[in-house]
Every structure is written in C-alpha cells, then in structure tokens.
Image 1 (cartoon, rainbow, N blue to C red):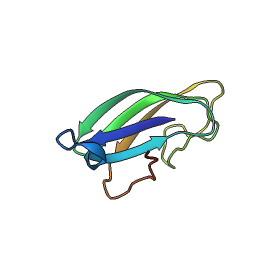
Image 2: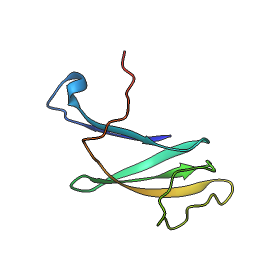
Image 3: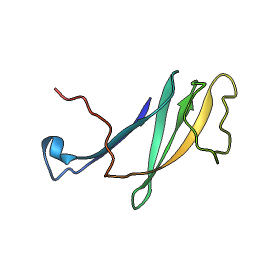
Image 4: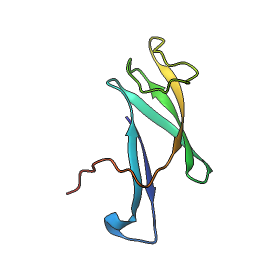
Length: 88
C-alpha cells in the first residue's frame, strides 16, 4: 500500500502527527512520488497490481487492465478524520 503522512516538525512525539492515511487494494501497491498541490491537496503517483484498487465513480479508468497499472491520486487532507494508528 501507499501512504501519506503530514507532520508538524515543531512538535515532538505523536502530537506532531497531523494526518495519516493509506491507499491500496488486496495486491501489491507502490507509491512512487508525492507532490504538494497547494492548501490541503497532495498528488500521489504509483503502481498497482490490485484488482480491487479503490477508485471514484468519475475516475479516468476504474478497471484493472491486467498486469501492472499506474495510478495518479488527488487527495484532500482532512484533519478531522484519522485512521486507527498502531503505536508502541
């Protein structure tokens, strides 16, 4: 799976974690590049072999095309929603 984390480096420990999420399906998924799009928007690119990689209804191509597929994802970071995190 690919993941995105936003940190506040002026704060130490877990208090500096502003946002964390992951993206992927049941197969191998790789995040290769991330770019800041301004504001709370980030773009993530990568590769997937998952037949159930999550897409939206308006995706350019929401189907698995066999073998490896590339993906480009636009994420809007919502600091009100957190996924459960595993900590020591």
